[in-house]
Image (cartoon, rainbow, N blue to C red):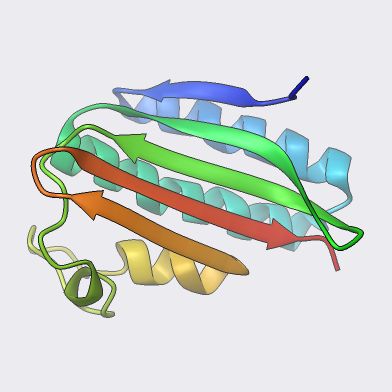
Length: 133
């Protein structure tokens, strides 16, 4: 049985719901308020990418376990156009939309683990984890 929380992302208001749900789960897991803010900011970055590039997608939130440690896992996924060059997209300052280019690189800095899997024409899945210290 899982405690997974699923938030469908198709508007900015849904991003706020995902952020709120993540903060609640993070507080339950024992994250400090600053860490809760980092998690919420990382969700904003990846969820805004979903809206901008795919139009819709989802954020999944769940508890994570590793070697006796607990944390939060955030999965952001969409069925959009995909990212042709993930390595390039992960570079700070890179943007195809004219923005500051902090999205993926910024989210990675805020979390402890970060992975992007993307296939052109199929979509993108970003998996992020943060561990309680």
